[in-house]
Length: 206
Image (tube, rainbow, N blue to C red; front, side, top):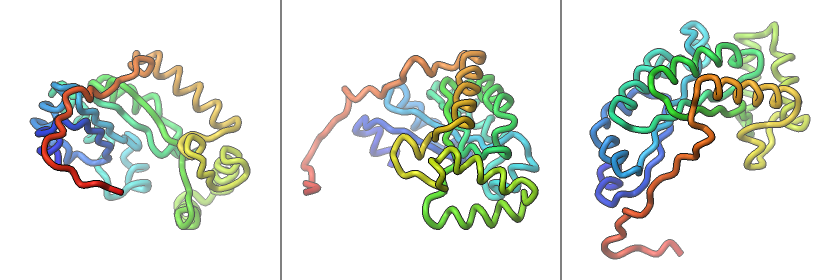
């Protein structure tokens, strides 16, 4: 896929929790040279013990920071994402995570609030009771306060962020961290679509 994107200079945004993106450093560097690529690495936490509970099959936070470093060294713009932000569980250590990513070369940072659509909600609640039973009610109370009293709100911008006191405080905290670490969040990075080549016949989608 990346080879085809490169052939046609098609803009690419990659979002990953894996270090496998390192295998495509050369291709991504070529795409980046034409301002056609942005890599977003989601770093859950730098706390190894918490990571094993949250994402036992994902790469470690430290390994993902090194992936950011390799991507940045290859002159590829890199975003670090903190996702999902789980109240009273994953909101600790945000400064350390973003600090390590910035030092490794991440240019932009972002976050996404916990989302519990449909079947995900009961699965999450079971997991929460299993690993954090002493704070499960508190966590779900904050989640619902941030989701208009529900487990989930499907509205586009609301589902990615949230509302209420916890979200407002998290947003302020994020903005302070971003300014202190000199992330480039205020300078919107955009793909250059001017080099896209639409050669050959095309199949109509409609």
